[in-house]
Length: 288
Image (cartoon, rainbow, N blue to C red; front, side):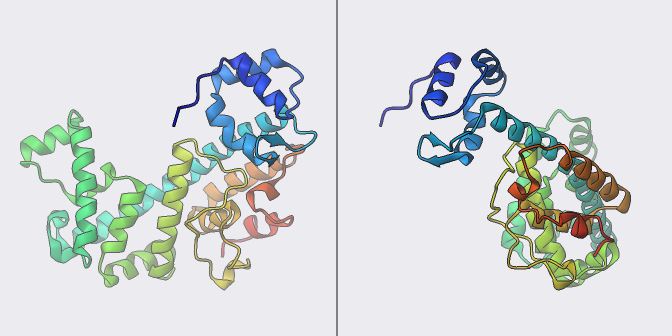
């Protein structure tokens, strides 16, 4: 199969026009495509098509740019929520494990119940250690401690996904204590939430799209959330979990910014992200 040939930005604009996209200012569209590649915008083009290579009647280039820019804004806002959650759970895991099994628990199989899955985490750390071999912290531990790392150093070099995997590998008694102390929640829900929000974090960190996205990894929602627990493949469902895991001041800042932004979205709607019309009742109310 022959790979598609490269098109100039002017050819890209003409191709979009032949597919029914309204472009009032081709020069501005070309400039934007030089800053943000056609391929990056392609997922948004397809969200506005009624059939293969045919845009819905009345769709404008400005409509798609508005969605693209809002996705960028929303990803950045979500990352401000996800960062403190990631740091918090790393801290709790390191504290619990080090005080229960010693600072060298990362090298003790009896500290974890699922050894095969845990070996995947140790491989993740080895990869990060090798990738960051010039980091002063890595150099110090390689020299002073013969390549052994206390758990609180290990978790700092792991991705959110890897940390959620550590949690899944821990003994039930340790998971229960962390879940209770950190969030006053059942350890099953916390483990599942960590997995789902780590997926969201990865999407946001790598500039993935959020607009009309159906998440394959869905958060489990209990009844107290006040939401249809069978309708949880949307970003809105993710936000319900983020509200539960966030510090109050962080959530207040996020929900206010989102409310302000929603008021000036124009033709774009939060319903395109799975939000109900009365979303503020769920996300601005007291935490569940």
